[in-house]
Image (cartoon, rainbow, N blue to C red; front, side, top):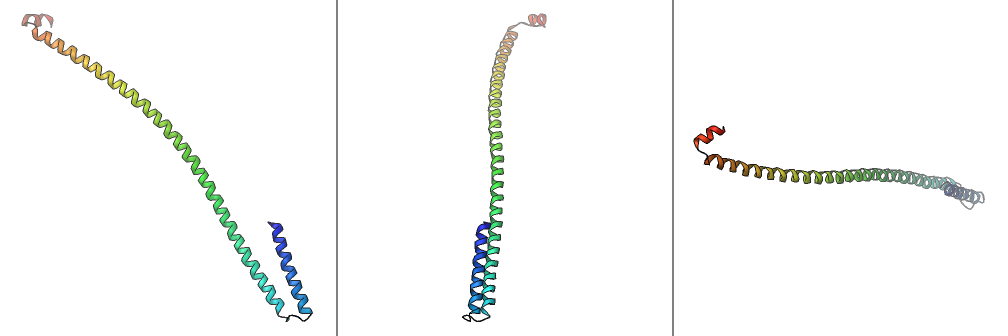
Length: 133
């Protein structure tokens, strides 16, 4: 970039020298040099501020891209944690369902045993109940 600035400055310098020579040859009025230098200054100032604003925008874009990259990394980590949590949840649900099924089966067998014992006790006579308990 600095090489292009050098060519621009040299171009402006050539314009000023040519205008100065034309004034010395009386082909241009003497006030023309002031106007040319002022115009060159204005153009240079506009270019400088435009470039500065462009650089500021480039820095802001670079910063935003960097922040987006960081957010993507966080998102990837969150997705990874989500998948691990989802797998753990599936394992825990499976274990819970197995335990629940085993408990239900155990409760059914206890109910069957209880009903059988109840029927046996109901069929006992009073003396047999007294002797047993």
